[in-house]
Image (cartoon, rainbow, N blue to C red; front, side, top):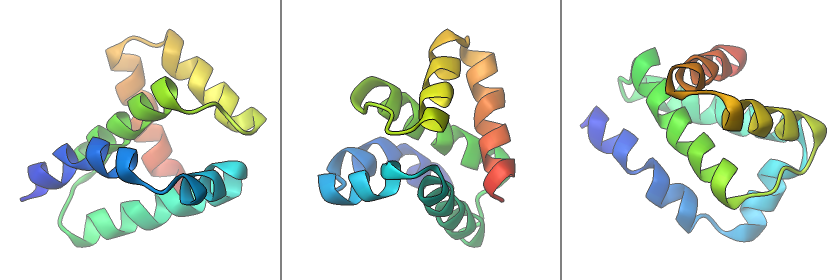
Length: 101
């Protein structure tokens, strides 16, 4: 079941209402709060840090490809994501999970 939740991340992010996306991405503290809520829900579903990081990677891949950063923090995250290789991106995803956890 946990793998199913991680695999549905791309679909859920893509289907998110654009107004809700704008609200979440407008402010970095809003983004961190949203991510924290999702991490907490994932933990309650039994997801471990590795599964949460994989989900965070999927979200980051989507955001880097489809969304323009709305603040300097998101711009920095996007730039780091784009220059990192897969291992570095995975490490960054773990750091984001720990940042909001």
